[in-house]
Length: 168
Figure 1 (cartoon, one colour):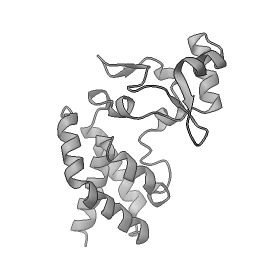
Figure 2 (cartoon, rainbow, N blue to C red):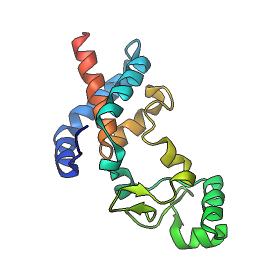
Figure 3 (tube, rainbow, N blue to C red):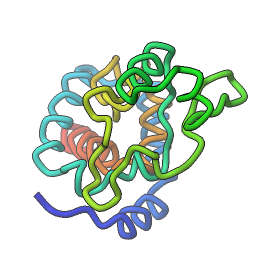
Figure 4 (cartoon, rainbow, N blue to C red):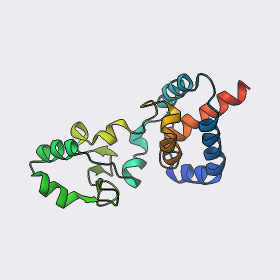
């Protein structure tokens, strides 16, 4: 498993962003047969190559959306009231979602890239990067967003691109 160089990753994404997003848009419009099986296989292969603890870019650059259940669970774990937790760590965005007030995430240990509340982390974090959460075409907007932040998502899309290119 190779260590992830975030600077190199960002350069690669910047260079390939338009091509990869265009590919994802074409998949959305004309979905090849067996795409979801291909996604599952690419996801499985990717996790043999990528270790989130080498990266933690999601925690450094994005915020999860906190549900009411998340807030209740995490505040209890931290021995705080829900109100105190929200006031200390969260803000409500334009769409009414609770988000982190700062980046990197306040619960990320920057030396180890580990989450200090891992056992009770938000549902959004637990499911990230959402590769096999739903059918790929129903979740394409997440792929388009996450290729810029998550090396694993970028690799999954690369693997799908390569597989579809060789099968056509």
